[in-house]
Image (cartoon, rainbow, N blue to C red):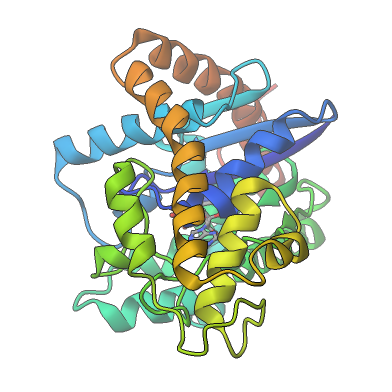
Length: 332
Ligand code: AMP
Ligand code: TRP
């Protein structure tokens, strides 16, 4: 049995990029009988840029939990839990922070981008990748399915695991990222040179998974393309159209070549209309299940069970780490 770990921040909006780049993949992976999944709501990460309003944060955490389940994660195959409810995440995050160097954290692209955007730069934003390393190493994860933007954080996690093992003895598994060849970087609908991001100021740039079919259709309709009128997969010269083809292929689980052939002689308007239809067809049943789950006590049962299973492994690992370092007293 191999462990797989991944998390998403409960920042309110779940985009089509999150779904296609990460969550849809979790669903496929959980059906592999050789894998045990640990999927969590990264609420400790959600306070690294700024503290959201208290009730809003609580609601966002619950919403993401309901959303994961609505997408088909099942509690028999996946341990679903809330990061802050397993206190060892903060503990190992702190150890990883001590093991890392300011220089390597300063080089993280996501940190540089976020810092450039905001007025304030909390220390937590800089040390965020060390918390993420702790999240992964706590569970001896072999695999970490993420979007392309997390690759650099995974490399740091691997470096920190190796650094710890070399210094204190073998404690951590060195994890491998799973980054899908297609859909790992869904682009913004208004600027296909950028990734689709929930923190984009323009809501037309992303599709929120809880939006209505009409809103989705409008956003796809106004997606930026080009003026040559030919449907061809060419990310460099036709980033807008290529992004729409990638979305179509990942939503429908088809090869990009097949989608390209299907729309070869069609107009951009026809491609957009079909795309809006397939996205809506994928999203509608998810939304229906989401609405059933969001206020259901079943959601709490699953989160309790996930917390219990995760805590068991996490406590065992942190004890080993403290022992290796020599923290506290040696317990018999
Ligand atoms: P975040 O919303 O930043 O917590 O990201 C959650 C997961 O979704 C991570 O695995 C990201 O890499 C992935 N992700 C976020 N945006 C995109 C995107 N535009 N395309 C593909 N994957 C994405
Ligand atoms: N940093 C990730 C993101 O912003 C979320 C995350 C936190 C994560 N801890 C993780 C992803 C551990 C995978 C494994 O998308």
